[in-house]
Length: 253
Image 1: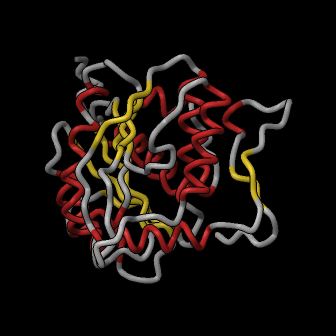
Image 2: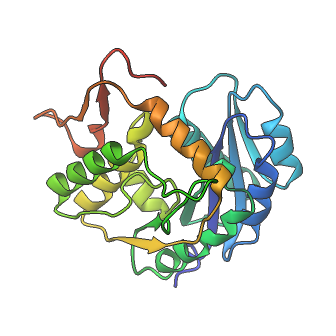
């Protein structure tokens, strides 16, 4: 294990999460190898940034909402500024977490070890079977997952179980290879494609996140993003990092 890979920076893009961000930051700071937690407040209308800072995060602020990919990139850029300004040792590993995980972020610890050990360049969190608050099996975004899975398989030969999972750990080098990140909900798919096509190893890791209230919010968000027709497009002249969700006029961000 290199000393650089062993230093982990946790990156959390957040918008209007003042009710949950403190618990997420607190849990993230307790994870093994995590040296710093950075939150990008992506144009929140509430006190997300202030609450995150009070919980111990370094906060980068967008004055307006720019989307998840831009928020992640701003946080990583902020990390570079922090390292240079304070002469901090470089964090060679990035842990990407959703802002609304709350205390359940502690369940993401298994994502870290395969990356800091140098065994893989990217781990992707696979959630256990989820249930809604009324005890029903979760569903509602099979079309999105299925299409993402097929797109990754067709372009890389690898078929993931959780192609759009936002809980990920990767090396700084892998992040750079996947940059610029694809916009919108295509960020995770584009990242996976870029890293695999660079010849690096990707591994899915089961994590324990059981939160019915969060699951319901997640389902609502995914359903609201579904257009009437969409596809994963690969222009003949493009590189893999230019693959993202293409959409009709009804696509809503």
